[in-house]
Amino acid sequence: MRLYINIGGEVMLEEKSGLMSRRFLLKMIGGGAVLLGLNKLTPASAQVSGQAIESLPSFTGPDANPYWNSVGSFVVYPQKLPLIQLTDRPVQLETPRNYFLAPFTPNAAFYVRWHLDEIPNAVSLSDWRLLVEGNVEKSLALSMSDLMNQFKPVSIAAVNQCSGNSRSRFQPRVPGGQWGNGAMGNALFTGVRLKDLLNAVGVKTGSSQVQFEGLDRGRGPEGKGSHSYLKSLGLSDPVIDETIVAYEMNGEPLPMLNGFPVRLVVPGKFATYWTKALTWIRVLTEPDTNYWMAKAYCIPNTPRGNTTPENVNEGKVEMIPIGSMPVRSFIITPDGSCKIPEEMPVSARGIAFSGYGRVVKVEFSWDGGKFWTKAELGEDYGQYSFRTWETTWIPKRTGKYVLSVRATDVKGNTQPDEGVWNPGGYLWNKIERQEVFVGAAK
Ligand SMILES: Nc1nc2c(c(=O)[nH]1)N[C@H]1C(S)=C(S)[C@@H](COP(=O)(O)O)O[C@H]1N2
Ligand SMILES: [Mo]
Image 1 (cartoon, rainbow, N blue to C red):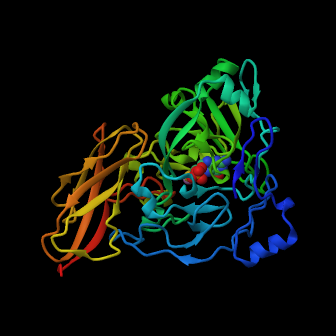
Image 2 (image 1 turned 90 degrees about the vertical axis):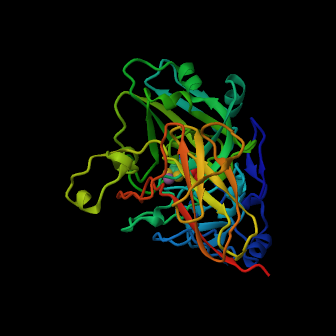
């Protein structure tokens, strides 16, 4: 399915279900194709009948989940390549490992996470407006052409990572989607500065936070958290100056599943703040205490957000909203799927990033983390982007090796060799390991 965009006119998917003949529909279903209900806000239910292709096992070391990705079937959704299905309601799809060889994640391979099951499947830009309202001098209802023409476009490369990325590594296990490492992606986002929109409406004194709401809906009562996904940022948070309302991702309109027509991009912060299908921006006078701020996506107010199940059970843990992403790095290749010949130079490659500042060093180890060598860093696309790394390793003898990678950011933060534990399953950034086998060269 392809997306049409015609600013000021209609935006639609090429194959609108209402226009399809019944015969065509039956043929598609019979052929195992995937259909997405295309009416605005209809539940994205039961549309996956894609071929169940088993994901290929690969392993990353002795943690709870021995696989790099989560363990699931591949599914195909509109505008998407085959991705690993975590859950279907809400739609949660993980990006397969090999896409992370490149610094920018293709839109069609970008992971997907929603919380509520009624997600927008089509948005008409002739009706759609971005409302900027609340404690402001003069609220605005901006059309897409207003956004594109009245405000200066800016672009930023930024990593979008779910707070629960790698949750399946947690010991003891915690509830929530059991993501492997693929709930992340990097894209070049283009849009307008949030600050420019706030200046245009004139934030009045006595304002504390700015709240964001998208088009997705749940079935619960209004205001309890199950009805709509609401997130807020403090107006005094420095990230307000960096945040953009993006209408392009890697030079194209956003995929519907990644928040078409516009989404918030909050560089350096976990994706929970990156509101998709953004339609309301609301300046608040009181701190936002809705479920998604006060209960969900909170971490212990401790170093690294670390605690224990005992402390949680005893009610000893003060919880605060999650913020920036700790430094991480990944080995993408070699992935252990085939034996490496002795003495053959191996190009080890991967990515690194940090929400606290530019990655300045990536180190590689082939002996499980005793001896480290510096890897070479790839092109710098800005401090919020993935940074690729590469190093050549020549295995001198046969047998099993444990490869490891460790990144350090400009603030001196480096990856620890201990896992973290908190009840939400957030902030995992332990050093990654990859077992590989070296055999005799023939
Ligand atoms: N409107 C809306 N925006 C949302 C969410 C949501 O449920 N609804 N989930 C957030 C969370 S927790 C994540 S991890 C990211 C996922 O972004 P993606 O689906 O584009 O990868 O979207 C964020 N923005
Ligand atoms: Mo998330």
